Length: 409
Image 1 (cartoon, rainbow, N blue to C red):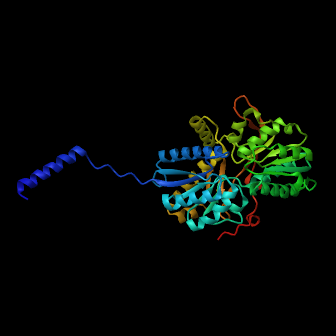
Image 2: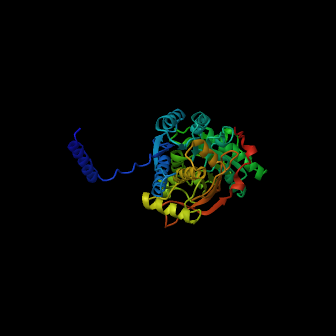
Image 3: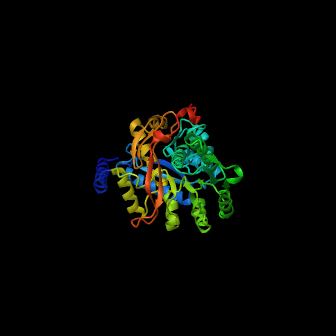
């Protein structure tokens, strides 16, 4: 190449460089997090609230610089509430999408199938909804954590409420799978220890309905004919909504018996029922937006209401809380290595809208409060609120590790 040609090329590159300016810095690759909830069918509202909580956490975290300098990308999958579907989408999230963690799960049946597979996938799972004791009990493993109240904790709180009532003869209405049957078993165990004088009705005077049930009239009639003094209801989602509407029409809530609903204070249910939710019922929840006025809860409640036009449910809180727990663990570990994050999650304590939560290192169960209250109307709210509210501290409702059946490997 001749001298004048080299000079011409140099001039061209200089001009192009001035025109284009300095090369833009490359954005950090997104940190992918998988969220698996029921997004379709009669329980889809739970997944929709969870997605909103996750999206709000993603936006807040990314606005503050992401996790370890990387923006968070949420990938949502529909479990449809079926174990085989949940396994398939989680494998896709881990092996195809390359997520750093999986968050979610609504159904206990899904959780009991998924949890034993997490060591194979070597990816942390943070359960936010499914309450089966097995997750942090007989099926516990180093890769699985639960950041929400377990069935044991919630039902122990129910037993404490029931022990203060006059009811001595109890029966139940629940879903006909592990969650419903375990709720009844633990309620009997805990209440009998608190009140040795109570009795529980035999199997033919209890009611367990398949999750596909839409007509609850036969189950309602069965319980009314049994004439109990107390009824524990562990139905949830669309099943609970249908039950309450039909039971109201049949005069069930005018009966002379105490009614406890283990998940009656889910805002998904309260919004669906509006003023059709009877007043004066004891109901439980894993998070209640009016349970405390801490700055973090007020900000979460107000920002969520402003963004979505509704008050946050415990599903929204669970997804929100889990992502912040993942962030805190990564920052504690100072790395995005999955094994290091798992180690950092063990024993992690953080402030959440629900209050101070610790992930117990021995079984990975959240050491957190359980909230119950009585349904009441208030002109300032479009849904039934809880008045009074009873908050049971973690130490009062959480079983010792040796009673959970967890043998962490």
